[in-house]
Length: 99
Image (tube, rainbow, N blue to C red; front, side, top):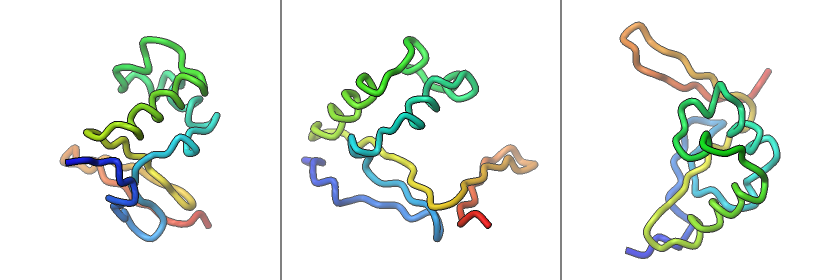
């Protein structure tokens, strides 16, 4: 199956957030700074090996965008996204517009 048609899939997570294929244009300085944040990259495998730059991240995203056998998703949020751990240890997410 050729996955290069990036018009799908799109997973709506509520009124203010969705998962969809991440285009190179979606890579911003804020995105790269998040990958380099120790609180974030402790959970990542590749990005924590080396400090990431706008160029290295864009190249990674470009390679995935052009691949016919993979999809790299971005989380797109209008407003805010809140993660919570339930008493059972399950993670939940609530998305919505910031007040």
